[in-house]
Image 1 (cartoon, rainbow, N blue to C red):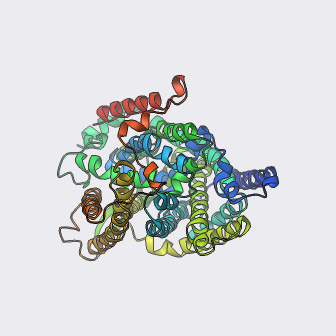
Image 2 (image 1 turned 90 degrees about the horizontal axis):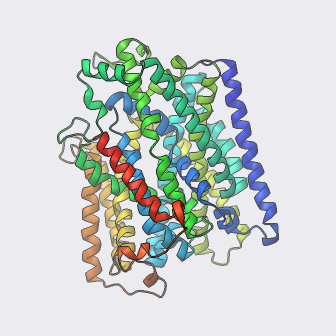
Image 3 (image 1 turned 30 degrees about the vertical axis):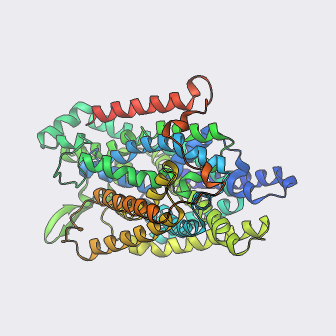
Length: 551
């Protein structure tokens, strides 16, 4: 339980975000009243977003309570290992900036399913729209609600479902009223609050431990120095050796950062191609921080627990007659034991930032896809007003479905691993059709459709076998490698069917693939340090150096 001062700070923060979100949305609507508040104004902020807001919003949509809570848990359990997901994202954001964003802006699409129709056909668009809506409900909203509910229940002593329902309703109101403008403005604020809170808990844990050297000595004494390594050898008990990271993550990462509507919608609302490219690169630089402010505090918590600096007795549970540590609540313990009154309220505000930004971003993307990719297909004469109305209704229904999924998803021992386990079986066919569609002119519409259908069916079958028969070879295959194997199968399927059913390009599709990878670099971009080529090379070198240091 936390002090009333902290509770007041948290409540004031929620009220402030609610007010700012409503104000931003209403102000944008009034400003565009002369344009009759078009659907583009509502769903894509009138395509006026600049790079700082895009970068901050991308980060806020990505980082949720799941990351704050589960990355600290992973730091406690396995050290810096899961930091790979954060740092590998920077490379994927470079791909988004260099190769994908230009086509998205050039084609003028409102959704990524819309892009697939222009590059392939209507069937591919329909399939991706359905999968994207379902994944947004499960991955972006339901898992975030679960993580947020667990933390709020621990801190405030309120029922998990009661707390997340209240937060969800508040977030849904300003999201539904204000559209993407309200989402991006509030996400930008929430990113700053989230980072501030994460830095506070990191400094508190670092000071309590006495610095890096005492932590190193404790790890050495307990024969746990491998926790400082992000590159693990073959056969590592984590199931994530170095080659699984480099082979499996790109499959997950390209889907998540380059082909998932919830994330990429901020790029689709960019003012122009330069802003669409620099925004993701800015986010890539911010993604350097999570290893140090999300994962490392969990490792500090582990070493503090070994020295008695952190009481984890409340996390002890009996399993098969043996006492083990259930590390799900480690972040909550760090907040309550390491921070004074007042700062706890700021940390809770940071947690709420992660939860609210994830919900708002996902609801906005769902409403956009349902309106443009599903409703407008059957109602091509639909007015902007009716599209906005359907979008608002679909956002409300999606939130209800997400809440209903919470009891089912709560069975995962690690929320973060559960999240990535699901992504690993969804991503391969989608990553495949986007990569081949953008880089290979012979990728045909029929092959894309069959790859999406067959690849998705394979993902579902493998996922089911993994859960029902865990002792099979499938059950023993790490999810990162399984994602890579499924991706290879999907690539093979699409290449074969592209030769069986040769491509027949339309006037649009022949403009939506690179004749060569170097063609994407032909645009000069801004001059000076803000040039997208300069920033891409700089980010790449920094990330390569960091991986070398923490190998």
